[in-house]
Amino acid sequence: MLRLAGIVALFVLAACGQTTVNAGPSPSPVIAAGNWNQNLTLSGDLPGQITTVVPDQGTQQTFCSGAKVRNGETWSDSFYAAIDTSGSQWQLNIIVENFRGPGTYSSRDVKISLQAPDSSKAWLNQDADTANHLAADKVTFVIDRTFQSGTIDAFLTNASSGKRGAEHITGTWNCRG
Image (cartoon, rainbow, N blue to C red):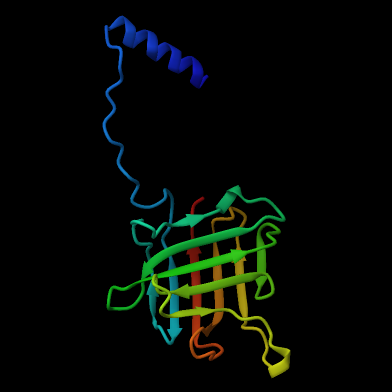
């Protein structure tokens, strides 16, 4: 169908005496289409609220595998948001390595990181450390049937100090992919 439309367009251009197409620059998208509104509360080392995703710029790109992912593949969501009153932007990454469809995933299934774009500060959920008798950071991550929204309740370890549960993220998330 698209091929036929292209052929028809060429005939129309030829009939009008125009041999080249004058295309202007296409605008860059500000953020990926869809609902990226968030309702996430952060407490701990970096307290604040995430309600929206900041526009894509340079290497700061928003991504969500969303409905494109299949069982057994990796589902992921990555976006930048302003959290604290300084206006600094922070990146939140969520990865489910063995996606099994909608449902509840735990710290065993999910890797979450919150970090400054320059990686100078970061928090991530840690697996259990049996040698030091430390349990895994508690994570409950829910993906609904659209694969594009759900809830999160995650405790993260400070990557610099090693302090477990130093950051806590709760609330609802949305993405489109």
